[in-house]
Image (cartoon, rainbow, N blue to C red):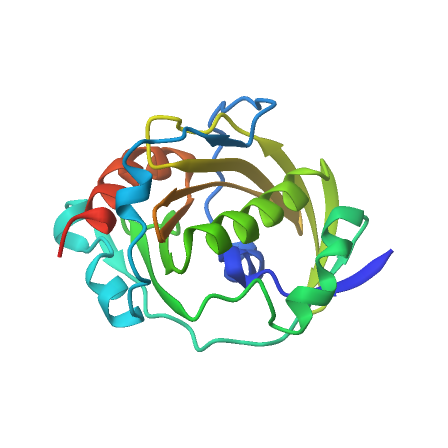
Length: 231
């Protein structure tokens, strides 16, 4: 089955289109049956404040001074509204209506930064979103469930077919109120790219860190700490 699905909400579109130039990471991360976790943190209620503006979220992103030496921020590309075609994933097919209309999978308050590391194509990307805790939880939960519900599927982006394999990963239960994590392997043109993606919801904030599995693990804690720090 073919559906047209915009999956920019998780920052995947940029990764898909850049696969030929991306890193190949063979980190031995093993799948787990739980891609998400709900910790019921007692501090969650206190963190559910009014949504932050995009400008406020921008100040909470990690910068080069937070990351350390060897990181270079990439200029953000202009937002593209071109859809991609997903083949062979009924779970993503069910989300097609919402995503193609820019409905419930779009958050108005958001900020993003992407960094390369060590002068190579290895990258780590951070995204921040702010909305009601209920909406953040529902939307991101549905997306992760859909993406990890299909072990393999294909995406056609810019006319190039990309084979994708997804694996559920253990969610970091000690961070935030809700957590989701997955490992995505993109294969195209004889090249393979492994991307880890972890999402943490803390009150009315949603943090998503994607990229090299090692870099995601290295910077996830500090990204959440800065994102949730009191203004």
